[in-house]
Length: 145
Image (cartoon, rainbow, N blue to C red; front, side, top):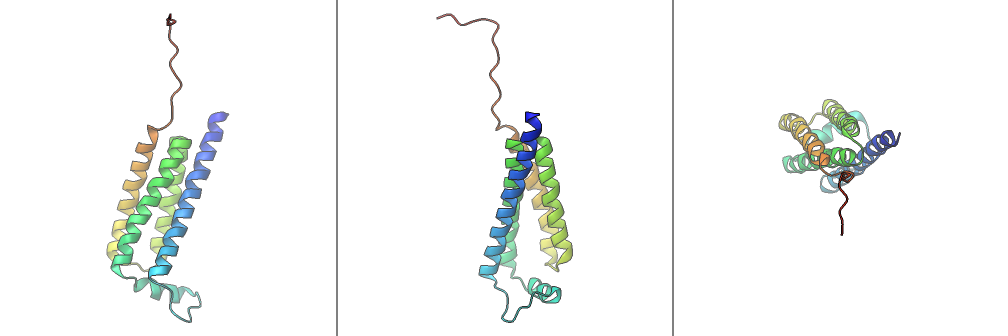
């Protein structure tokens, strides 16, 4: 039962960290490329805004999203297990796919982001595996002192 709690806690922390980091990416984006005056939040306005994103901003976003995917899956793996990091990876990749399909980003960005995200989640899972402390081995022979 303890293992199940670790999996759920790993999922929770992985998703929470990814959510916080995505929020930070959005704050960065809004700071360096603010919404225009009179922006009402319609889908058409958002699409026009995204179409005009400077490439340098998108380049930084690629790196930040990759870091987000890595950290979320790494934490889930370290705390939970392959199940926790797998769930987090699927949710991050789903969110990314949803975002890329909903908005008209530059074609290079749409091609690069899935590759970077897949590499980042794979590295997060692989790097997170080695972190949990293993219980000490029981020795058959007592050490006499």
